[in-house]
Image (cartoon, rainbow, N blue to C red; front, side, top):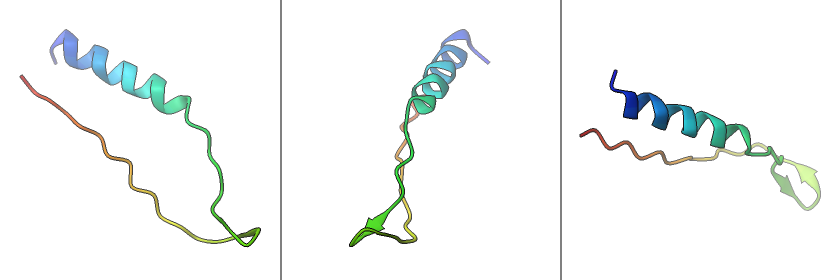
Length: 44
């Protein structure tokens, strides 16, 4: 794997760790929900 790919992957992992989970609420009660997290990859 090229060094740039590894460095980008490491940055992505570090950024993802900074995300904080907040449960889905409706009228103050917990509800089930799905979240889509788009990730763009550019291979050169």
